[in-house]
Image (tube, rainbow, N blue to C red; front, side, top):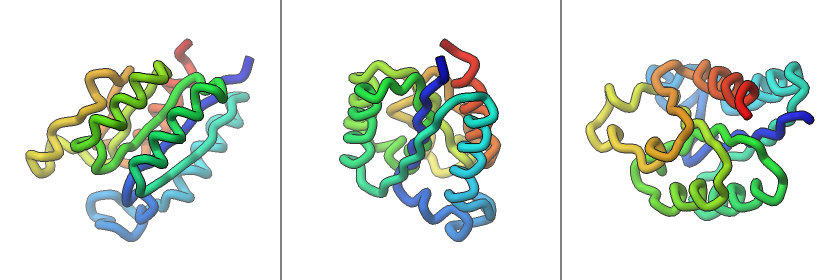
Length: 145
C-alpha cells in the first residue's frame, strides 16, 4: 500500500525565497513543494502540500488528515512552534506520526525560538539543514511504519 503523507507549512513560509534569504535561503515554497512531490512520487507515495498563515486553518487541515488516512505529517510550523499549544494538541489528538522541520537552526537564534511546543511529541525534529530538512523528513516518513 502506498504511503500517504502530508506536508504542512505554517505562517510566513509562503515568503520563502524573499524573506531573509540569508537565514532561509533562495528556494521558494513552490520549489520545496515540487521537490516533495517528486520525492514522494519516486517512492510510489502520495504527498499533499498545505500552507497557511492562520493557525486555525492548519489545525483544521491536521484534523482532516485523520479521515484521509494520512500515514505521516512533515510540518514546519514556523513561528507557531514557539507559541501554539493548540497546534500541539491537534497533532496529539489525531495521533498521526509527524516530523518537525525548521530551515534555520532555531537554537542559534533568539532565545524565544529555543522552545518548541511540538518537539516533545514529534517522532523527530530536523533544524538548521536548510530545505534539505524537508527531504530528510520525507525520506524518514517513507521508511517508517
